[in-house]
Image (cartoon, rainbow, N blue to C red):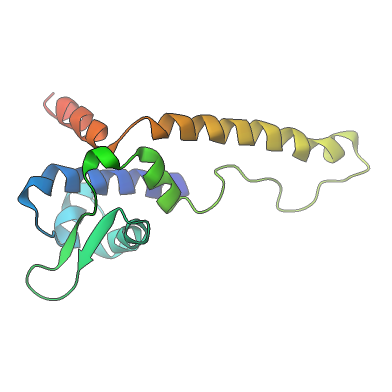
Length: 145
């Protein structure tokens, strides 16, 4: 599954947990998976990444086992989530070295590094301005339609 898709699923998970946060309880992954439309096993992998980043808490064992937000939704930026589930830069350079004797092959990577770096920084600035609380409010507004 694409990294960007994992990011979208992570945002869905956190938004669902934010919606349910007033209950202050742990929710099992199969209940969250029902909203996301994917398997609980796959969801747990993403929840594990979110847990390592300090965005969710897990409670193991029988009754009451599951997941909940570790912080208030207003305190979790979309950038926090991006950094938790996107392990590498969004854009990558060639997997094999371009021909250094070719004028384009010699110059393409430095040119792309600048464009990719600037693009990713712009993305991160935008994501830092939005929170899970904002995403929840927008989702609820659109969900009414």
